[in-house]
Length: 602
Image (cartoon, rainbow, N blue to C red; front, side, top):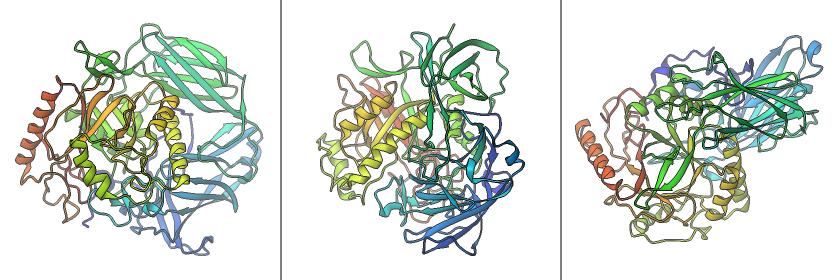
């Protein structure tokens, strides 16, 4: 495979890798970024290496060229990371203070050691976790070691499109640390989570702050939920200051310049309801955001919300339609898998993520389906401020897929509207109970993590039957976790009749729509036309749906497809998702080339 680079990868400064604050929905004034060069080693045994193999640039996976390693971690190996970090004057100020260590994502399972003592364990390659390391650190030099095990597609764990033997619509497996590692110093009693729920019709926002206190280190592990377990403080006074709404399409960060709109006082652990005067709605054209500051004792943090509402409502003909703020919105979407030729899962920079989102909008898309991957939280911040709707997939897992059933046969059955129950664990690769339990837990954690982002409209639970099970039950669980968003329970096929969307993939047959009485009809994957751009393709092999000999032919095919989609809107079509945003390895069906250098569809 030919190695491609993005312009951001070529310009990468190893001394300043992804330096932006990584958690926009709960932001403090300072933090310590631990990205950069770490020591690394591969071993066969679970034993801290006496000697390391070299240096790896964190947070790029060892399989990514930007890591400086370009080596695949295999299921029978361990990957070890090591770095030294320095804390000056800790002994003099640690009384009444806590030091929290954060990992954005580590694929798949890891153990974390600080100065030789275990600080955390975590399983789940797409979700963040943290550890209170207050009692483990000392003045001066401290040693941080991370051990990683990644079974990739040989296990039932969440894996997305990763495969050890890449090819077709599955891509190079990546492993290890792939999102920012960072630390923050907080008071002994500190703000742990901030939630906001808006009601534009009533003109109110409800805010809840949870606080942690007496979180003494006990040498145990971090749970999969991502939060260090301590005593939840309730009843402590909380102050909230909400600023006037603003547009941040030209600003990557919030400056704090807006004047105070309103104030409120409440208690930790309880909902604080606040009336918002003269509300400004969030739309794709005017994505107004309300920033607010929360103060709890000595701790202070910043967050934001937006006044907007997604729903399915019937039009004057009785056809269910997707609505934003009570108005019908046709969601013209593009499938985005979040792969980079030089960083794999990790975008080379904040600017690279911004480029994708702004170009999507410039190409006429008002929605992006984030396909079976969870991005760093800054990606969602940019969607929030730039004004693009997001459909967020859950990350698929399960045992080995039976493609003759879930892909080939299912395509024909879907076209013929033949329904199949999801009660076939062997056919749908969900025989292991531990894998099913893990998927439910990670779905709930994904919703908890991301539901504060106003750009997210829809949760997509399953894709094309990959590891699908108990769809109706999981739809109810997702609805309980977030009653304010739409749910696409089964994108593609194996529809069990629940949720808000009747979701169909159609690459090979005549496009059509079958309106229902309650659910909105969507074409959640279409297109996929292929064209290889000379000097900008990674592989000789190609994969896609309908080859085009040049860019002109590709443009004509896209325009013809767009015309067909528009004709279906009066018949009940509410959204479409074009496959896909960029080429990826053998898949050359992107609007852009994989290196983001050539826009193929004009």
